Image (cartoon, rainbow, N blue to C red):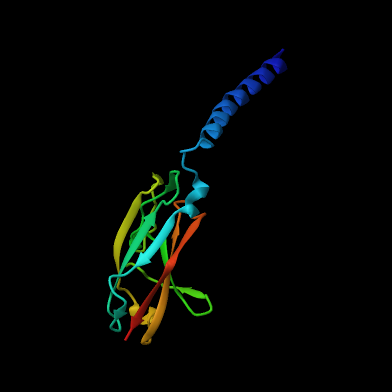
Length: 168
């Protein structure tokens, strides 16, 4: 009798836990509900207010995150360099990139609050690349910069277009 009671209690507990999971899974498949895996469908654009800079001159950058799909996508608004969800790379002619280090004087880890980004919604951040420019752009010349934005859990990334700048 005791074994039967334990078996019934175990089955009812499993059933109680299984039903909300099935309901949640079904609702996540409905159109209009943001999916975590859709993060890569967002569009990230990088630009600057000018193209030519003096050696060691801070570089104004504009990061633009947009949902160009017809469905909401789960993303975040952590577009500040100090948030550390954006990484910048200098890309050479072969497509090889090396990361620009020390984008911000803030070294603490931050968290991004996931939020749905609606169709057509546009998030923008104006930042200044100003630290360790002598290491990132050591010689006069043309540089191609690309940004990568990571989702709140660091499992997906978006690559931006290339920003071409000249240092003289």
